[in-house]
Length: 286
Image (tube, rainbow, N blue to C red; front, side, top):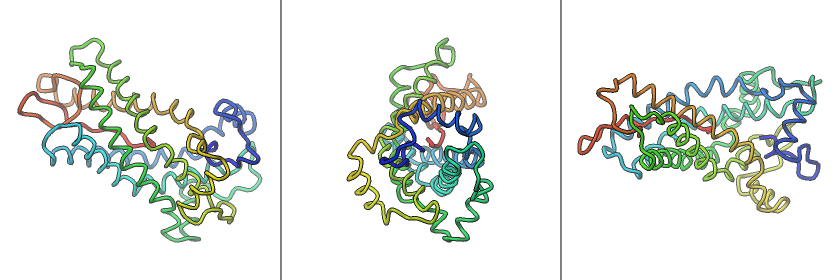
């Protein structure tokens, strides 16, 4: 996020590794975990929403097809934005606070909840939901691609409960699905981060999404849409690999292998050919 929103005229960081080095040197290891409270609180609810909505959507759609996986994922991504947007707003503001300082001399927010409370008091509900439109634009197709990619990969590589390589295959499919999802919507994430970071210190630079895009492209060119992409992809693979593998294995053994699927795909029961697990996955932040 810091790479996405830094001032291009006076950049603090030259790249992912330099950003990591600078944060540790200037703010200690604790600087790497600024704003962690917000995602830790929000991801539990986000995952619950995504799992429930995606599973029910697949049952409603009836047939386990790639298109239905995309539609069910898109529905889940849309609904979880209600929590995702304020959560990421608080995370963004907390991470920007005291940038480059080991001990911030002036802390505007005590914690993530205090951050949201102060924003609400100052700007109302619209302030808490700053960046909601861009979050919807990112999450709706992003989750669709997320589920679609996992479905296509698991069908392609195939894995069975007694397959010795089932877990590595699940990890690979989950990690690659996360990368595919981020690549499909990353430019929107850059704009979302800039809009949510805008207004820190009471100074607003952008008047709308279009204005943010226009100013960003004019000053930095099209490469602005790839700022911070490396660190995002480095995080996306292990996070989503672990999530998909865990969800699949928990569902597999919770329902009993003897009644479970003949492959590792997650999806609603398919009585026409073979039985599959109900597909469910993790949110964003991706």
